[in-house]
Length: 543
Image (cartoon, rainbow, N blue to C red; front, side, top):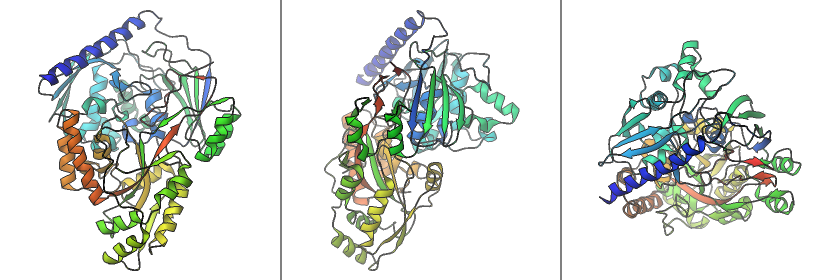
């Protein structure tokens, strides 16, 4: 009964929010006047592509998801709270297995140089978007066969049994079982809604793969051009359905991989927003009278994964020894330089269900050496240690971190070869399991514990974001139970047990949580720090 009341409340609040949006929309002209302003964003790396369902990193999502696309439900800017988007409201059946989304009317797909829509957004687009991920025999998927790591990592390919068009503005999702984080998951990037009409045109032209290079959605910015490793250009969408949200005529991504160069560009006003400052640059940026430096505790985790499909990393004693040998305090002092906190669990302290009392190994090189000897490696062994080529919110300097770990491991006889690749290649090869150990991390996507424990460590994620390739049934059974249990207290007890198993098995070594800074020039208005690890420019303006 309590659950039914909650579900009704969710729908009523969604309807109320949608009603406000609709009434606002009626007061303005359909094609909004966008201020003639240009904002340049100094981003940290090139996106691997522009089809959100294929990717898992903030670099990709900033460049595609929150510019070009929308989802049925979305996170409020600067928050993990879900609000209506392309769906004005939704109903949940009493058994919790059927979700019916009531779609927004009057939403236009973007008009670009490569596509002119003949109709508005409707249920066909929603069904197409999800059928593409659900059905291996769906025609567009066969024409452009790619993987959907988030969708499969979270088990949505098995959870969603049917997506039906009830009428042109109503879509029904049927689930195989109750799934507590379902609405939160639907706000995630992979669920960005594509145009079926555009996809049909690409199929007809034999150019299905263009959906990853020439994106088209209903979002606040229209894609214009991309020069790899240089610039991405967008223009404000004059037909955007959310009134007043687009306040920039031009949005330019200036891809600048060196954080110190990004900081210098910001100081010279060559860009007005930058990503991920070097910890060493923060004090200097704070002194600049023309720069704003808001910050907040990061909803993130930087860690070192152990590929348990490679010997001897399948041995828990070896994993414990490698973890014990790492001087994490020295890493936090040198790499994070005051902007990091030691990680003591596989999720950040700001995530509900966090267990800060796990019995993780302490730094002890002598004990680590003894443990390696006990495991049958008195003289150590050779190993590859992968280091990311880009800064991420959870790791400001992977190269330095790798060098420090390499030095620590040498003291116990483990010879680590540091390996790196271009960012897209790094992730692709890691998904394939080529590494022995790798520096990686996570910024939470939806505020739910499953997004940490399931997405990073569940069996369904072994070919995706479970870079440790660790599939451990007692742990995975708890993850599945957590997804089908309602109530935060009940779910927290389950996830606490799962974290204790993690501590015993140690498939990855937690390193740090970092403080997030979002440097901007002071003429930038309402740029918010996004707790989920990307940047958004809807609602942002320039004085």
